[in-house]
Image (cartoon, rainbow, N blue to C red; front, side):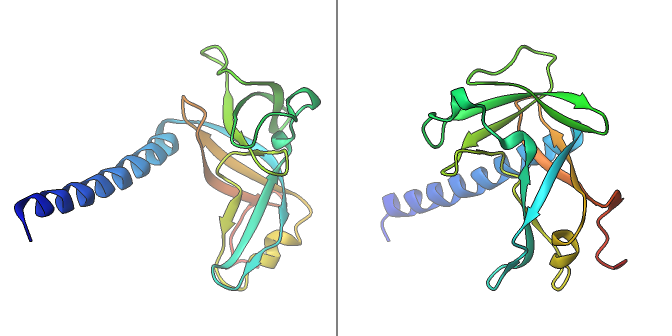
Amino acid sequence: MSRRMTILLFAVVAAQVIGLVVFASVRQVALTQGREVTLQTVPVDPRSLLQGDYAILDYEVAELPEWLREQPVGNTIYVTLRECGDVWCADRHDTRPPDSGKVFIRGHVDDRRRLDFGIGTFFVPEGTGRIVENARDVKVIVSLSASGNAVIKQVLVDGAPFDPDNR
């Protein structure tokens, strides 16, 4: 292998490693330094033959207002949140980030004309997906970074932390 090809190979491998480290770091910063909020959700479809048990979580704040429904798929929408009792709800949707000091979550328009926040899937141990699916009330505690990135911290099933061992 020529010297040029060796350098190119190492550059590609280094770029992949750096990409993984940056991705993990962004999520870790959101978890450790982010603002915690609780979002109301509805679980859907808890099983995949290839991936095991999981719940698809559909958030109430993912609903787009009528005036934003024509946004192209993939566009970024910022949802300013406000406290509504024991959960946070959507206060305002915008295509620009809100003023500093506001609590917000950043999502992308999906093909169903709802927002995808990157926290729509929650994996559970095999055989426990039905616990989440059959729950009367599911809430998700997420940690929001300063840029609106969300990371799931905990899932609450009928008011208690999800514990697959305590069925």
